Image (cartoon, rainbow, N blue to C red):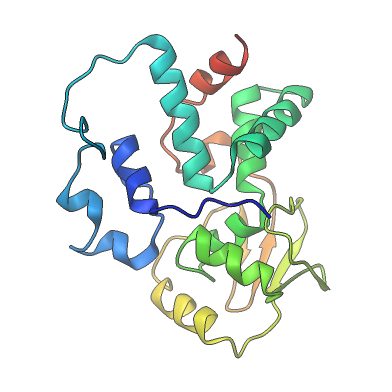
Length: 204
């Protein structure tokens, strides 16, 4: 199974903002972006004027890294979004938000999407009573995502650490179950991104 195995803090530095890829560390003074907010590499501190294509590419890369999706899978999600009715960019974000690993993270059962992915792979969650170990599984409105193994120490610590973190308005979350009331509208997704740049990039 393909996945990114490099240093995730480099991704935040490359995109020029915190993407909160390492959970609690991103909120501490150990955060690499807080110490070095310029891009990685020899020419990271150089100032370059971004072209139109450069802005579009950086927007797409930012979305990929935020949700932990690789290139081929991201392209498939875009094709799915194009086929759906409505605005393509909003459809794309809705698909990314409905991934099971993102649901686990949003519900507060993991400190990061990377940790959520690992927990899903280790069969710690069920969807509508059935064990699902595929992080890219797309949930639907009305689905119930539940913690299967309530004695998992990682999940216990994450629930405690994230108890004060606001939960999405489009799901009902209690200690061990998250119910998807409806898939999110654009106004209910707190990811700050101009998704129309992604549409422009793929439309070339």
